[in-house]
Length: 113
Length: 115
Image (cartoon, rainbow over all chains, first blue to last red; front, side, top):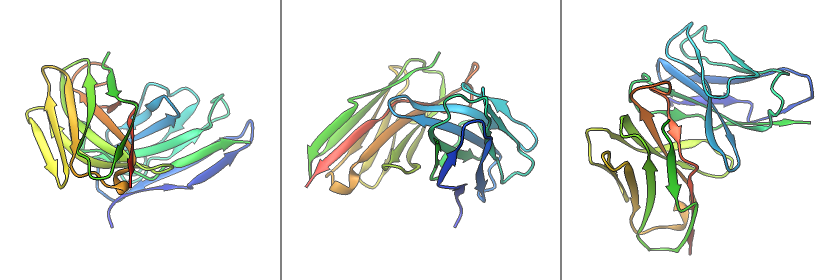
C-alpha cells in the first residue's frame, strides 16, 4: 500500500535530549512537510522540502532540524533548544508544492518527561 | 498574511441530518483548497481537493464548494452518520508570498453525530 509512515507513534524525551522522528513515504512525491499540532492552535509548519537535498524553514523552525538525503525520507530532529516540544507531530507529502493534494501520516506524539 | 477561519468550532447533530461546515480565508490568491478529516489521536485524511478554477467537488455523501472571490468554502455532508464524528479541517495553499505552496490551516470544526 502506498502511503506515509511515521514512527514511533509515541515518543518520550527527557530534558536536554535530542530526539528524531521518522517519516517515510512510498508515493514518489517530491515535496515533504513537517507540521506541529497543539490543542486550540491548529497545525503550524515547521520545515518543508521541495526536492532531495533541499529544505526550507517554516513558521516555527526554531529548535528543530531536518535532512532530506533520500526522496522517500524526511526525518525531523527535535533538539534541546526547543523549549516546549510536547505536541503532536505530523508529516505530509505531495507531488509538488504547486497546488497538488497533500497526504498525511498518522502522527507522532512527543512528550517531555 | 493569509488566515483561515472555521465556524462553528463544534457542532452536534442527530443522525440522518444534512449539515454544512464553513471555511473562510482572507486572500483569494490560492492554488487550491483542501478539506481533511481527523479522528482523535490520528493523522489527517484528505477528503476533497478543489482547484482554484473549480467551483465544487463531490465524493460520495460529501460535497465541497469554493467561492474564491468571497473567500469562502463549504463542506456539505448528506445524511450524517455517527461514523462521521471527527474534526474537519480546511486548508488553502497560497500562490504567492512567503507562504506560497504551503498549506495554511483553519483550527477545525469538531463534529459529533448522535445516534
